[in-house]
Length: 329
Ligand code: TXA
Ligand code: MG
Image 1 (cartoon, rainbow, N blue to C red):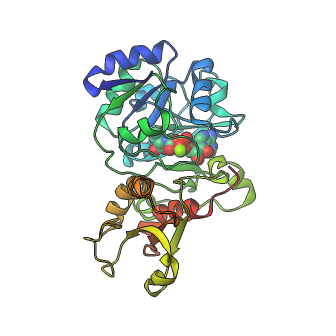
Image 2 (image 1 turned 60 degrees about the vertical axis):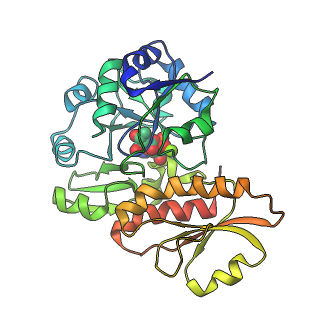
């Protein structure tokens, strides 16, 4: 049985964490599935509940830079970046003995993050330990941006869900590492902070990790991700819509004004990148619910209109791409 708790009951939730249990909680990006990051047995339960490959490491969450420094040596340049960019950012640091082994999944670095969400920080502070937390979805499914999505995936598999609002950013954090000589930043996973923002705010050279060695450091990018139960097609040319949906039961997640958003099977992702980030995962699950309800015997598909190929949309486009092609597992 999974307990549903109000966010005001965070002390009760924190006790579940200290007792080695799993609690889903809101952050500014997506809901996380938290466990005590210093308790190896507790962390292992995360992998089981999600069906996550044990080779994919977890992000460790802290309530403040001071809290982080109790566990890790923080290089001044990374501290500077964390003070400049306070939301949706994860940095990798040399691993610490104080963190449970299974968090790292054999990696020499640990990914750490300080959420900007006040509630998340309050909860972590109440726990009194760092919190290991992946997105609170079943592995391969879209990340949850509301507590009901967590419940749909993990009911009966975790101890509690804290019922908060929809998450503000809606897409996961950007994971970065410092380049070897400390002169720039590599992005290991695109996310809520765009490349342009990283560059402008830090004044550093920023690039996407693309070499095989760099991608080796970005384990999550290998796995299948973000997939609802129906095939996803990306619509690059509006005039292909007839051919694509012919004799199919479909839902369109649209972006341009080519569509009439009052149609029952058209959902609107929003008019800018901020809205697209906030809505993508939510609408993938919404489209799935609509198709689940339909009694039609036709093949069911989700069509997503291609989003602009610009820096601000890069992270959400990457999610759409991954959702449409699948992957290893
Ligand atoms: O916004 C977020 O990051 C959310 C919230 C809950 O904080 N968490 C999240 O966790 O998205 P997860 O586990 O779904 O994705 C973590 C990503 C994976 O791609 C994983 O491979 C990568 O971070 N990662 C974890 N540890 C790493 C490390 N030491 N080096 C490189 N990548 C790492
Ligand atoms: Mg995830």
